[in-house]
Length: 297
Image 1 (cartoon, rainbow, N blue to C red):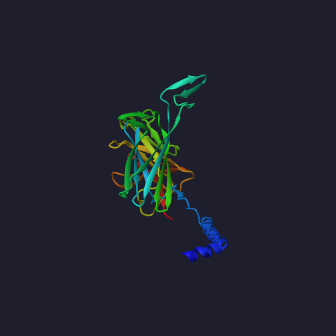
Image 2 (cartoon, helix red, strand yellow):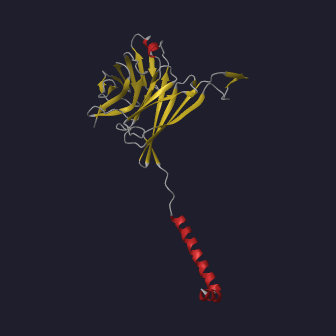
Image 3 (spheres, rainbow, N blue to C red):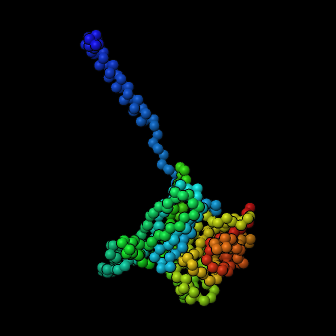
């Protein structure tokens, strides 16, 4: 020990220089690691506009129109699912200021932007999930519902391994229009018009139409042409027969046919289809999933 002290005293400057070089080396190595290491890449999100064999969401209106039921299909292979429901509503009360109307939340005009976000519990890896989403809020068994909800979008974020897929579907919620007996999609390219006894709409209550990002298994040798729409009524209600009008973005080929998938029968049925340029018409026996199908090439 004494010898070490004597050596250190004799070589004090050398020892300090050695220690300084060691510290500089450690600091330089740490800085090098920080410089060369790459930051973790964010999870890639892919827009899933349409995949015939992919997941899809069916929407059902609640009888009172104050909520919708989200029914997700073909989800077993996904790790997590979150959703965002966006829509507009009408203010409960309006305060008139000059020539403008302002609701209690300070929004000028006749509508308020609303949004609801949530998570689907996917721990059990089911192939189908169902969840009710309210147009409003509830506290201590007292609910305050948004008024005049008609149009909106549903955005789903579904994660699988290191990728997240984003699905966006447009929906149109409708009150019974007894005078016209007409139901339409948000883009007006799909119309279902009741042939007779329009008073049945008042018994059905609300209806909802949304476009789909996927479909049930297609008939053998068939492909999708254009958008797919789901027309639904409240659970345990039925919609009577009606005339379907489908408008495509281009003229339809002569072998195109309107098909409807009836969930109760778990099958696609071909409608007797008439074609007039980009418009196709046919008679259907109620609510279901509607698509224009053509022979697979």
